Structure formats: C-alpha cells, structure tokens
Length: 420
Image (cartoon, rainbow, N blue to C red; front, side):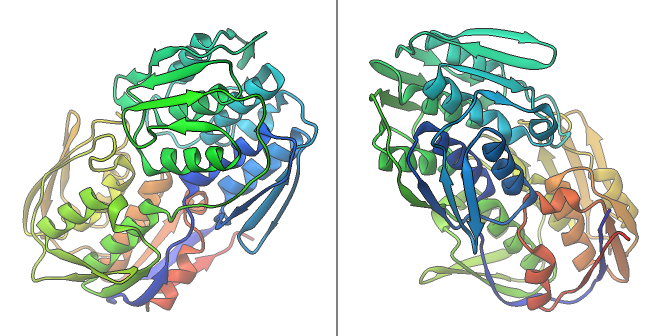
C-alpha cells in the first residue's frame, strides 16, 4: 500500500484550487440512474470513491465516460442488482437504492462498507422507503426492496445522532418518481443535499425546501437528462485552511465557499487562525500564537465531524487545553493513538478528547485508520520536526484529489512512496 513521506517544519504558502465535493458527487452520480437520457456532471473529483461509483453504474448497465473532471452517464437500460464486490468497498454506494427503486420498482443492494468510524446503520433509509410503500427484506447481507407503486407520504428521518445525509438523499431520489407529495421532516440540511436537489430539479423533479429540516417532493412521471456542476468540497477546503494554520503559513483557497464553512471558520478564528475573503477566494494565515478551543461535532450547520480529526492536529500545537466532543460517530478517535506517536498529549474520556497542547511534534511512522484521520496525520506531519511516514493512504485517496500534488505546490516536502 502507498504511503506519504513528509519532512515537516515548512510553512505552506501559495494557492490551491479546491476540487468538487466527493460527498455531493456520489449521490448525484447515483441520481443519473433516474433517467434513460444522458446526464453530464462537471467538476467530479477523480477519487477512488468516484471511480468505484462509476464502476457500480456500469455494472448496472449504464454507459459512462470520465474525462478531465467531466462525467457523462447514459443509463438507458439498467438492472436492479448491485454486486457485493463493488458495493462493499464504499458506504456511499447505498445511495443507488433510491434511484433503482424509483425507476425499476425493485432493488437488490449489498449492505455497504466504508471507513470504520462507528455504527452507521441504514435503518432510516429503509424506514423512508417503507413509508413510500416499499416492502423491505434483508437476507444474506443484501437489502431487497420492492414496490408496485411509490406513494408520497410524510415521514420523520431524525436519528440518534441527528438527520441522515445519505438517507435524506436516498428517499428524496426515490420520491421524485412517486405519486403525490412526500414530506421529509428532520431532513439533513447539508450543502450536499442542496446540490443533489438542484440536480434533481434540473432533471425535471419538483423538490423544495432543501437546506432546511423540511423537504417537500412532488412526484413526477418522468425525469430527463441534465447538466450540472458539483459544488466545491467543503471538507477539503477546511483541511487546507487548518494545514495553513498548523504550519504557520499563508494559503489562498480558490473556489472554496465561505458560506459552507462558517462553523469551521469560527473555530479557526478562536484558535488563532484568520480566514479572510478576497473576492471568490479564501486566505488563511495565523494571527499570533495558536490558542486552545472547545469543539463539539454536530449536524450541519454545526461543526462537521469530518473536520474533527484535522482540528485535533491543530489544537495539539496550541498552548493550553482543548476539549473535542464527538457527537456523530462513536469510534472517531482512532487517530489519537497515532497522533500520540508524534508527541501529541491527548486523553479520551467518553465522547470527548482532552487535548493538552503546546508540546512540539516530532516525526514518526504512523498508520491511517480512516479517511479524515489520514488528513489529520498529514497535517501533523507537515507541522512536526523531522520525517513522518503516513501509511495506508488509500484511505486518503478516497476523498482527496491529488493531495500530495497540491501540497507540493504549496511548498510542502512530501513524497508518495508507491507500493512495489
């Protein structure tokens, strides 16, 4: 497996262009299954996850071409069975269930895989499908959903850790070709849900309220092909903002959207990192010494769980005690033991991590456990003195497009060591 070798201690300087959002692109690609006409999706990040989704679409019978960030999909004739060997590799693959159920009235999908960061059941997806009239059966590791006619209804999709993003997307897509009106209460408000709704509406759907806790879908008989450009990746943007602060550099982000990053920008400011708007760009730099901050992860528009690990690396450098509380995934502190190998002083108490910052970090070999933990270890390695080798970066390749290439352009001393 590939790894990154980082020689730290160099402030990042320069410009970086933020890629399209992985978490927006995956359900949008799945939504192309809702029509038998071609769809063109632009600013699709070239990641292992998006490549897997393309393979899944092709395995269902769709024709797909991916070139220079533009993906063209023509799902003229498709089947309703998704192969285990593809679906198991990526949790986001579950979002094909809604489109298949809507278009074919049946779907057989393997239970998905993904990062090991805690329980992420799909019960709310199935609850939503059942509310639309589907019969659900799980056997042999597969979800079987069938329906004679999808009928709109009002449903509540709130869960133990808040709304479900993929569940909201899945049910929203299924309801577009149903009869009558569907109302999703406690819907996810993430920008990625809004982006999907915009694409669905471009296809001829009638979706209102996306971005609020109540989404209304009025079913239509048919959807047509459409063109769409994916929103910038707010998690990638947050990662580079944090890396600028951690290395005491100055980085300009091109294409990032400040309105999607308010909670992150607020906590960075509290920690001593300034984020300023300059036209369509964001500029991140330190404003003095790093300071401790307390963070609790919450559903959007709260602080995102996908940025928790990266902020932990930053706060490990701040003089004082920070408390980071994880309210979304119960197993998302697996990076703590690896940060400790670099010299971070962090203790876990229940759902909280007590970060005793201010000690210098020094390079060491570390192992990535999941996508965002990988980014946290890269940030820590960039800030540490000496050499850090981040192993198992296939996690990182799932969600960051050319991270090592982008960091090199900012002056980082980072090399990809390819497996032989």
